[in-house]
Image 1 (cartoon, rainbow, N blue to C red):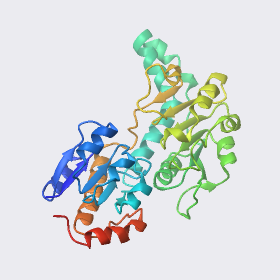
Image 2: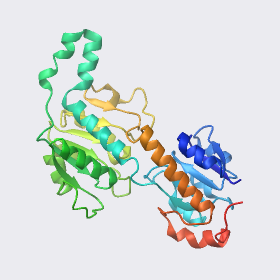
Image 3: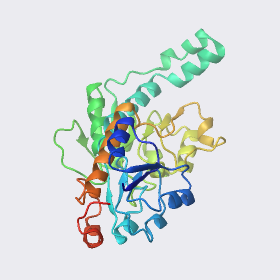
Image 4: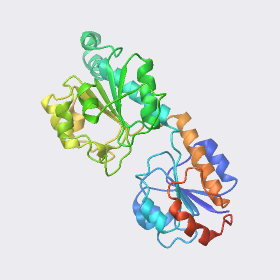
Length: 328
């Protein structure tokens, strides 16, 4: 059977679907050297961690790199295309989970949950209760969403359902009249929102999108919520904005360098919530992502193009190499 290499274990249902058609191998660690070595005879790679460009060099049997999820910044797409390797992803399947996480952060920041919980545990019941009147309802407040793809659209719907006004800006606008969003400029999202949720992909255009100028535009009572990629935010400027009181706080599911160093200044702020890149991870989303990735791999192993083909320019070379034949 063909070898399918995966950077992480798959959801049990996805593993069961794949194991009848392939020899599944799971990375022993995520270092570049290990990934290159352990994927050397793979016909397909399922990607949940960054893979190096060299993984596509001199791999005549490699047919596919399939993203377990949506974001493509973990796959060197140009190098895959040059090698005739098909790249696919599974867009939208974890959008609900990410959006629910954004609303969790919104409510927690509004009600000072982190301070309440820590104070109660360290100093007692009344100490925790002392923060009660600092809490705010989110009904009638404004959620600004930057990036209106699958995730941003779900955030907008949930925020609207909770009585919030929704302003939206997308670096790559898409027409979706069903979204409860007022489309405005980036500057208006930043200056008029009580919460600013980042849900855009990491591209050359969005890298460093939120920096010093952005924080000066935001209300000093506003919160930043980042569920996109760490590099969308200039972290040094975020730290400066928090120190200066230019914004009220932040919730970060992603940072520039993961995992976050134990002495990173962002960990010192009581008004900053940090989670370890788990917004899109629930049992339900892992099942959807795993099954979606495996189904794309199985299509490619049969010689068929994937449904969510990212690099159609690779098809010609792929067909020359494999002639539409299933993997042996």
